[in-house]
Image (cartoon, rainbow, N blue to C red; front, top):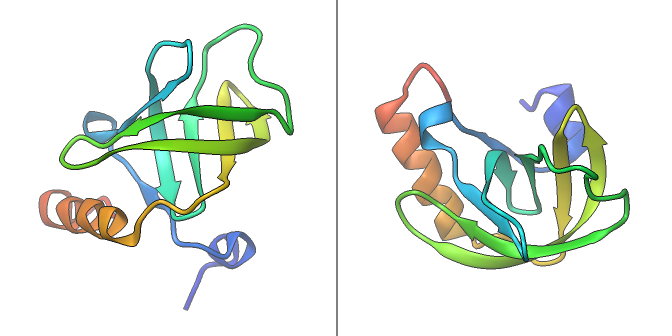
Length: 112
């Protein structure tokens, strides 16, 4: 069964140990570490000042450590404690998420 948090979100999230975090490169900005991803969203650390505004559209590149690098675009749905949550306009391909999940299960069995 899904936790209440997963039910509210509607999609499973992959959370990353610090050493395995993907990087998000917003257009015109430096890389930001990604805390978690799902097919429809991601959350990243953003020490920039000023941070992006709610409902702002952000474009950039999401770079996974082992596999893909994809262009993404999303809307800021939360901005809290220097963490930005994006709702993506297009899904992250399932095969990328599956590869990430398998790697984490294999190398960090207690983590995921």
